Image (cartoon, rainbow, N blue to C red; front, side, top):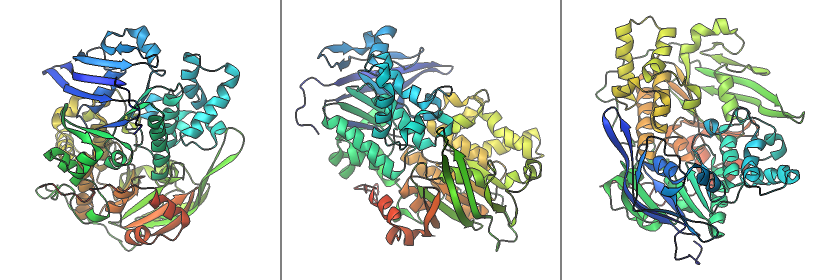
Length: 560
């Protein structure tokens, strides 16, 4: 932390309360929250989904929502001119002056935050032009520099692309570049590394650390405690809208005092948790699950043979997204796929799902043709292979209720009666830890963790043979993540469902997988058993990937 801390905090929050009206009455999302961010330090807000972290962040940038009732004894920002701004007194015009220039904001959902009709270069340039910081002739050069700073390679091609053309990790980095564009004194980052692989995450965290060391302040909102251990100076732990524990990283992570903090630390997956229930017990121990008998199990449930896929770039070049990849997945097995953002993981997942047709090679499902079929021929087989997506909000119909979202696959692929469909939906909600009270809600009213669990329930609806899991727990806090990972393992134990587990979180992959494939630049550079790859990596890239992960001091901490 910068040793020259000004006496006046950059951000001061005292007794902040935020509430919203609901049909059941007033909901208190944040209750008497107090903390500060000084120039030169990184403060982390941690807690599970629904704890009030994101509501706090939105309140601090004037985006809590029209129905929000906000009260605080102090909510101030010290500007670059040294003047103290009372944030509760800001009108719309003043907020427009502050956002971007004084306060940068990185949102959690990059795909919904970026304008789908604008190119990435236009998105990043907007703060520069809005605040008149550069001449128009210098914009392109400055945008390219910001993209490089955020860890985006080949910036000139990326500037010409739209959000949907980028991987989740690249989208998130573009959003970070936009937030940094105007050089704000305070950066508020809400889950900024959720979609990033370990190497790029390290690069982005170094950018945040450099900002703090240069005298800026960073408020980091995250559920990833390894990120907190790597970058933060102080930590505030939130539960149900309240701060239950706070202190230095050393105090909170090495000697947690509150039982909730202890549970957070105990739920972190890694090498030491393999074969164990992260939540302490089998989540389906008392839940009837219909047995799923698989025949022909000597044949792989999924076989990828010499598959390649390339895409055209805006400058006329070619991106080889997947290059001559061969993999097999056995019945009841989990294959983890790791690699940096843009390595081809997600494209490979789409090829497995037959959402794209490989330009070379073939994919077989249960020993039968899959990638070479017409869509009409594939449709009756699609229940056998399902997906858990990285960005559920972007995949859901925003007009559908939760009940309609879960009814959709049952209507399309089963002959269940209406009462039987409702019973199945209630079972699915129970399995993923959600209340039936959510059935009438729409996706935009749910937290990130709730949306991800709805996506998992939807994928499980028709009892598939294999799940293609693309960052299935990336949006979840550690306790909810633990519940979902335990659920997936329990279902695999009972149903012999196979999984392809695509993730940038090496601890999660290490906990979940039987075998691992490491990808770089569209190729599988190393594969093998999880113990072999993690303990004795052969390829230089695998060694670099593993070395970029900072071990959490209390990864194996067990709550009393």
